[in-house]
Length: 96
Image (spheres, rainbow, N blue to C red):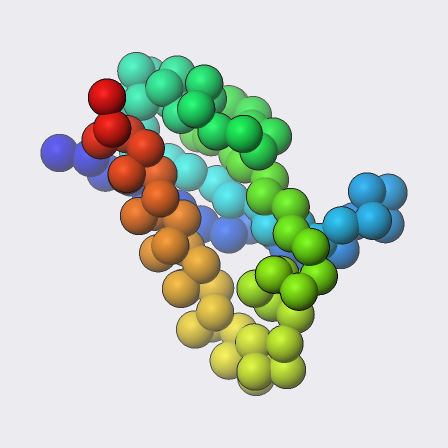
């Protein structure tokens, strides 16, 4: 059984890239799962030990933390984004 956990560890606007980003830390993966995701993910990824770090970049209109509502209910938005990324990664791992 997968013990996949996704946590947002950083987000904001990158002045150097001129883009919005969200950085995810993914834990609970086997070596095989890490290798599979590293090969499938298009966004920049880095593996440190058994943890995968992933930056996802957004245009301003799609950035999940760019609205007033997201600032008022930040915990809800963070939790939703973590759930959505978890579902996406699980889907990638299940597809063969």
